[in-house]
Image 1 (cartoon, each protein chain N blue to C red):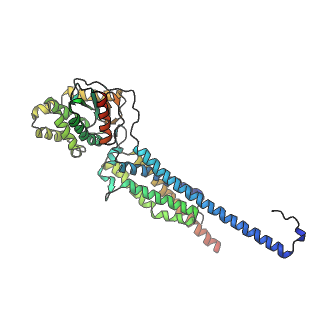
Image 2: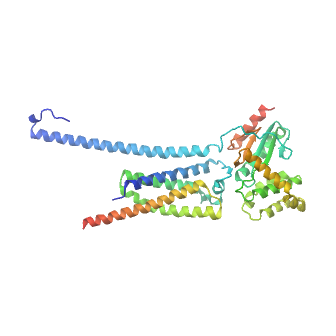
Image 3: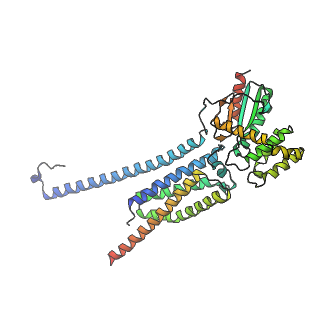
Length: 150
Length: 248
């Protein structure tokens, strides 16, 4: 398995940042702090929009759990078996698509941009790209192992 | 580890010694790995726990904590006042009709007005944020209704139905409907709605707010002192009750 350390550590760091960001929004959701309206950000509009929850579960909480799972997978793969990191490939495409959808909602439906949501879209995009690297590296390593066997 | 007299050891003994060293090494390696596991997982728990705690702290801190020097103390003749204009306790709100937080606070202010009656002046000042497309129109509508002595009635209707008009392209029509509901003289209302003086008043209130350093709504001033937006009814009520006790 030739997935390099830096890839997993980068994944670890970015997923943790995403986790912090989403947790902040979740906390804000549940504390019921009414986000006051500020001149420059549209966060209060985005966060109080009708699209802020799916089946009653706030999007921020789903994001928080999502990033936590990814973070856990990164830790496990450092700790136990390198190959575990490949399981992130099951999650990150979903996260990436969800982010695209949320950016679309902000731009064209709610028509307001929320900084924290854009941070989340960025982290999930980076995680998706890292996943692509991981897939390339790990399939590359199986190929090279086969070559060695020949 | 140094062996002091190697020549005296038999082959057998030497082999045992080597074996012992090996198991020792192995055990140390296992121990090291265990430590590593413990440290790593502690770090993970610490990072995640600390992260959650920190974010909750961050999210629950009041939006502005500068109970600062800026003052907005006195009631002016143009101000819309609930309660007693000459009360010793003055609560000034810079508000935006399209802001959900302002809509959240409006029933609280209503309650304070009922409870404290003549002992408080609750002032509404316009601060329509530029990123709220219908906020200004709403302010004009309230002012226009004010020309027919129904500012607060319009104010209530506008807040109660905020969701209905906030994304509306033709919000002006919605407000005209409200004017009808309030039995206002519609022609007069429409004229006043477009009145230059009213637009100027709203604009100057906004500029006044900007000069005070306001960048968000609602912003409250209690007897000139800027409040860090209280998070709930209880907290807010306590602050006001204290001010009323101090100014009998």
